[in-house]
Length: 457
Image 1 (tube, one colour):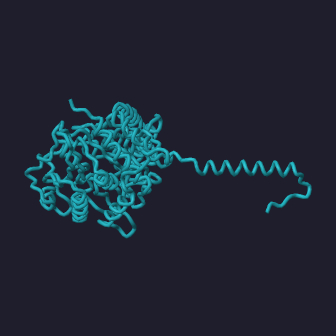
Image 2: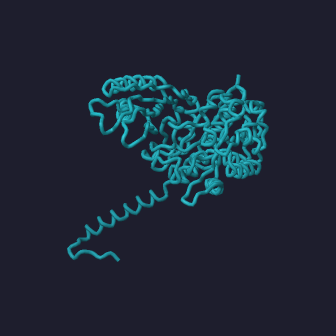
Image 3: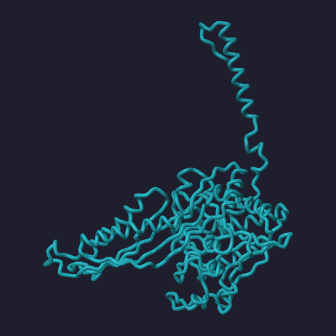
């Protein structure tokens, strides 16, 4: 019963009753109004997020650490066991599974026409004390796409093939994107005799994986064999997570250049050499480290520059360092920007040399060209995300990926999902299960959109 104030009139009661009735009608209308998700049939998920989560959690058991995360290096007994699990999932999904001479696992689903293959997948190997999402999301997500297609009895014009690339991280034998590099023709038999810490060669490990190393070049994929390569991956950076945007449209994978720099001064007694007469290589190199940071920060953009270590000689507490060695790495999607930054850095190094009376020489160690994602594929990723009502962000991959190698022989595209707090290559690496499901569903839709739209004249 409504309790009225003693001074309330009949007119006021009437007005209050009208307002209450109006409010009730508004609430009822809002409660019964279909949400965008209810009115848009396209928002229905085809992939099964719970099933995908189950495969990811099972995969995390191979090489699991007590503190969380995994150590599952490429070409290891742990990796071999995980590969058997993954190959089993592919067979259960009805795929024709084979392993190429580089150790890459492929699972083929036939298409209705004789067309180039739509290839998609990632890797399952980890870094030392890595996480459970880097590479794994794209690998298990690709298998989930096949399962979802099977659930819906969906047919495709193109043959579809899931791939698990071998030794992407490169912690074993010091060769990153090894499997995809062989497939792209970038790496060849010259890598077979590389030895690990136990004295085993890559050829030895390929034999353990059931392969004949003498046929390594048979793993190369010929140009024209692939209609496209797609890779779903965690961002490995903070942009999507901080912006609360669920899908990243990858513009391309950054190029990188690495130099080894050696600063030469003069080793002398630390107690008897006056400060104004020293040729301190470590002091000069320390200035150069800050030069790298300052030059890279001075220009707008997503470029990054890193000095990963410093080695000083002779390394005695009472001797002025006569030699210092340090690397410089620059990454960006624009090669011209990398070159421009390096020119400024090198000029500043010369300035430091004059100030400190030393000499610094830098030698180029590695030069990796950027790999641009196909613009049409980027549009398809946006369309697929839009059909789910998911916001997107365009951004580069600042980490090297297998897609960077395959881009040399086929058009490629990548889909990013957020990494919580930007953490990757760490046991605390995490992507929410909702974001994992979103990424797999976007991949599902991209595969079908490309299957419909790609022409091969």
